[in-house]
Figure 1 (cartoon, rainbow, N blue to C red):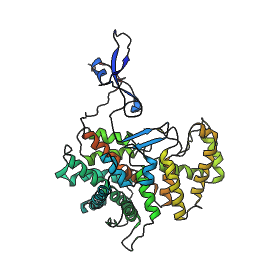
Figure 2 (tube, rainbow, N blue to C red; figure 1 turned 135 degrees about the vertical axis):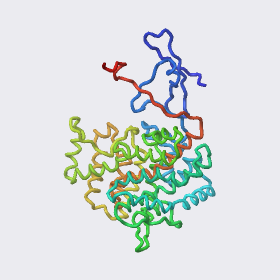
Figure 3 (cartoon, rainbow, N blue to C red; figure 1 turned 45 degrees about the vertical axis):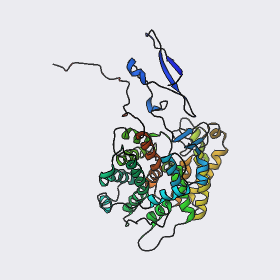
Figure 4 (cartoon, rainbow, N blue to C red; figure 1 turned 45 degrees about the horizontal axis):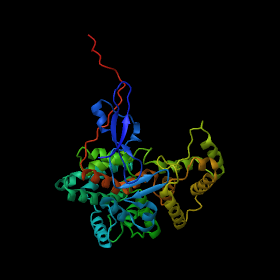
Length: 425
C-alpha cells in the first residue's frame, strides 16, 4: 500500500475522501480512484487521457522529453544495435536474450511462418478489391479455428506458443493480403531468409524467377518493424487488453487490435502524409501550404508533423530519417517529384520558427510513408505493415495482463439522457 494520500473534497459531503497515490519506477504518479464507486462517484475522463487503466513493465514514454524505452532500453540504441526479433523477445520476456536464446527464438519463428493451406481458400472468398486491413483482421481472427488444442489462456506455455505463431505468421498474412489484391500467386516463406527478407520476397517475388532481396531494403523493413513494435497504451493496444480481459483467445484479441489500428486517426497517418504531398503537388507550392498550415482559420494541417504523445522530437523519427535517405539512394528515386517535395517541406518546416516554437517536428509517420512508397508498396497496405510490426507489442501486453490478476474492463459513463418516464397510456 502507498503511504501517500490525495484528498477529494466534494460539496455537500462532510468528510473528504482519502485516495492512495502510487508512484511508478519513473513517470507521473497516479491516484487510485477505485474506491470512489463505493462512494457513489465516478471520474470523468473522455479518451482516458488522464487515466492509468493498468500497470505495466513493458514500455515507457516521456513525450515532453522525447523518450521511448522498451524494458528500459532507449529506442535509438535498439534500432542501432538490435533487430526486430530480438526486440520481440525483449518485449515478451523482459530481458534481452543471450545469443543462444535469440538463435532458438529465431528458429521457432522461422518454422512457424507458413500458414495452413486452408487459409489460402479463405482468401479466395474476398473480392480482389477488398481492403487489405479487412482481410487481415478477418484472417487473424480466423487463426483461432486452427489451434483448438492450445488455446488455454491460463497456460503460460500456450500463451507463448500463440505469441510465436502470431509474430511468425503476420508477415506471411500481410503479404498474402497484397498478393490477393493484385491477382498474383502467394509466395511461400523461405527458411533460409530472415523475417524481413521473407516479407520483401513474399511481397514482390513470383514463381517465375528467384528474387534477390537488397540488404539495404531488408534492413529498412526490419527497422520499420522494430520502430513500431510497441508504443505503450495506445488505442489498439488498449483494445487488445480490453478484449483480452474478457478471456477471449489471443487471435481474436489481435483481430480487435487490427480493427482499432485501421482507424485513420491511429494507423493511417503515414498514408495521410502521402495524400498531403500529392495535394501540394509541386515544390513551388510548399510555401503556400506552409502558410495555410499556420492559418488557424484554415483546416489544412501538415500531416506527419507533431505527435499527440511527443511534445518534442519523436525519437523514432531520428532513426528513420537516416534509413529513409539510404532507401531512396538504394532505389535511385531521389528525383521523384513526391520525394523532392517531402525533402524540401521537411527542410523548410525545420527552419521555420512557427513550427519549432510549437515543436511540430517530423514524426515517424512522415518518413515511413516515404520509405514504403519508394519500395513500391501501395498506400492501402501501409497499415497492414504497421500491424505486422506492432504484433509483438500487442501480444506482450496481452500476455502481461493475463500473467497477473486482472479484471474485465468496464468503463463507466456520465449519463445525460432522459430520467425514468412512463410509457404513454
